[in-house]
Amino acid sequence: RKFNVAVVGVTGAVGEEMLRVMEEVDFPVAKLVPLASKRSAGSSVEYKGKEYTVQELTEDIFEKEDIEIALFSAGGSVSAHYAPYAAEAGAVVIDNTSHFRMDPEVPLVVPEVNPEDIAAWKTKGIIANPNCSTIQMVQALKPLDEKFGITRVDVATYQATSGAGKSAMDEMVNQMKDFFNFKLDESEKKKFPHQIALNVIPQIDKFLDNGYTKEEMKMVNETKKIMHKNIEVSATCVRVPVLRGHSEAVTVWCEKDITPEAAKEALYNGKNIVVMDEPQKSIYPMPITVVDKNETYVGRIRKDVYRDNVLHMWVVADNLRVGAATNAVRIALKWIEMESA
Ligand code: A2P
Ligand code: 11C
Image 1: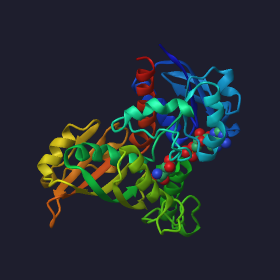
Image 2: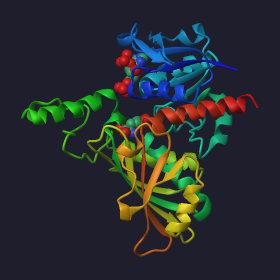
Image 3: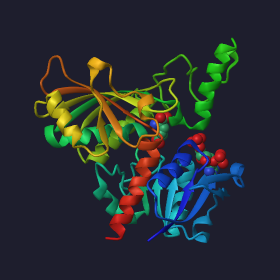
Image 4: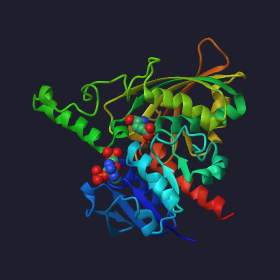
């Protein structure tokens, strides 16, 4: 059976990618309803070679269009206000923002890790999609946890500008152009706390009272909720001048001893994981490796110098796909499978 699907925020960096991923998996769409703000209502988007007119997101659009699946990616405040209207109209909301993630009545799902949590969707009608940096990390952690029992993770991220949306990507590109025109001083610096071109910024989102940023605490709290386990996580999240693809240096502490060979074997069996690890040939994943890919890539797998139960690895994924659109579409497909069982 096919479904009436709304994509909210369809003109955004993630929204556009939602359509591409849905095309690729041949998503069972009966009717597609692309939604955005008043600003882009009337513009068009392409899906499977056909033009669709973008409509303005309103409170009653979900009821009017008889929407059954609503993919939201237009920011936390938009989801906070409009997702309940979609749910009320009988749709399952798959929300890409942080707004509902830690709500105990809303499942937070990475289909490769905790698909069974989708079953609890009915309470609020909403399933939350985790933060991009959390998704790729837990995908790599899951097969290791099953075999070696993870107790602690220390992670440093290298996050692309697209995580902050289209205008943030533009801001970086404009700063690069301005650099070559000797005008970098005058370049707009609005989306990040500092210049991002030719720089790295150890701040993503706001700082909290504990000295960590909101982005860092998302990795801490979301990992526990998804993995149903009190894993200690400490994160340092850094913005780098990359357009697309988040990278993470991950240190995993385990109950059992862990060798790189055994870790690789576990990762080979992990779902949607690609092991790319031939350091002698300079083969390892990088942001340019993963653009438009739907898998999470792992390389630089090595033992700790001191401890037999500690492993280091490098985890890279397309933040707009694996970290957002692909995860949302996979949740939707799993939801369809579970609902029609
Ligand atoms: P619009 O194009 O009308 O501004 P990004 O994450 O790349 O910045 O994209 C944000 C997405 O969210 C865009 O599709 C944007 O639409 C949409 N959006 C932002 N604010 C609203 C709103 N108040 N109502 C509906 N869609 C919104
Ligand atoms: C970034 N991870 O890379 C952030 C964006 O909680 O969905 C994602 C924010 C979120 O800037």
